[in-house]
Length: 375
Image 1 (cartoon, rainbow, N blue to C red):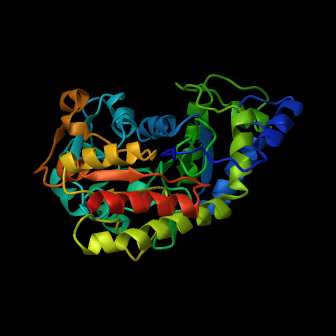
Image 2: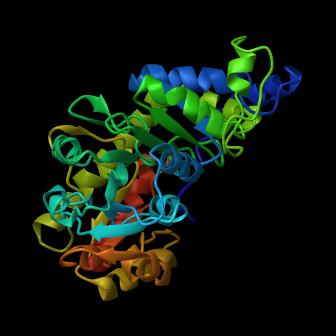
């Protein structure tokens, strides 16, 4: 069976986790946590990176830090994971969904301005598949209407827009290091902070509402309860696992890109025949091969193709059910404008196996079976 995903593994993870145990510092903010944070800061050129227990928690932290309150509205795409919306709904906000672009599957930046009301507090763009949203337009709208921007960059490590790392445009950016992502710590994430003035509040929020981080830096003689907070710190053993992959981040990305390009080359003939559609990468975006997907004619054809591939020991999957059509989406949000592409495109998309050690032969076999189906 060719699985849809195999969590990345480089060979040094266990060694580094053993070091974390031997350091006798396995809770949050140990040596490996610091190494990971510094690596990501250097990689993305962000002001501050705080590792978190998940991208979900990073997004929840961002919602706290931009002071989302009951009755506020946040604009986002419906085609995203539930965490993007949940982070704001938990604070009492109403989520306002707008349609996506059919080419990148990202939020349609031209529809955002019309969805703004006097209650709008923030925009939460989602960079689908590690391909950047049109951030110049989004940031211009945010500046003109005095809105915060929280980037859901869950799939975006090693990806950029016009040479700038995704996750570093808005006030906050959120990475995921879940086992399905390009780099993994099992469960985990990171909060990227743009403005130095937000760092102390973020540290307090992440450290159960205390100034413990300042205490460990020797800036105060004891730490105290300063504000509301929770525990968003991952174990240093998780960070040790991640650091082994950060060291090889470029190698892992290039390996994925090689398989992504192979998929593209082998499936282009089918696309030219009009049988399927392939991913689109704008010239000003550098993606990270987080996923490779095709689009079938419709949901019925996709279901038949999934079944065909399953019989050939290939696990391919579809992705999000649009949030606005889910019970909680109808309860906590509304769709602004027309759903021209969100539902239609979501019913056509099929994600093919993509992981670090996927082989040339496996991609050749997978694409061969897809061609067989369309015969």
